[in-house]
Image (cartoon, rainbow, N blue to C red; front, side, top):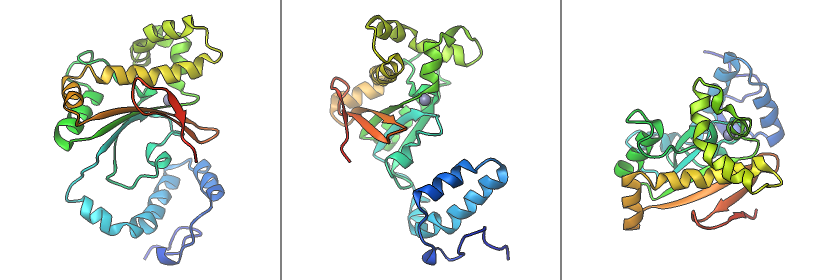
Length: 234
Ligand SMILES: [Zn+2]
């Protein structure tokens, strides 16, 4: 039998929860595939062991009521920020948490496919678009990366019109202003999807926005697309 990973009690019932500092040190140490597989072993012995019955139930189907569209950034992990359990959050992540306008990607759209499944099959009740501080995708757009070609150029080109609007207001922090505006932009584009519009009109779906401050761990919440961002007290 394989020995447990260093420092791990093989029986999760007797394992003390790690402190946040230990967690951060461990994450910073995740450099190799071996580290990744050690992480899996910690999961299998720890969190999975604690939630085995939940996973067994989830194997029979998922019924999340909330969809989150976030950024790929490794520092803005939705399930971590909202402390969700498996099966609770239907998530799409891409560069700069963008929702392309309906039809612009044709039928080969990752966001469109996930949205369609979430709204039409899962009966999702809430969609949250979450931006975050120090977003590399937003920064690239501010640097004019639309001319970079490749995949990044056309992707961030979706924000060029918005960039001009935001910069025309001469914000004190253009990166932050763009990050918030980008959330509103994606929320507006969600409504261009006919099945999203229909669910909104029927009152079976609500849209919300959020912005996560990585350094402070603060969440700004946009209760409805036409509202204002407000910091959630903690
Ligand atoms: Zn980002």
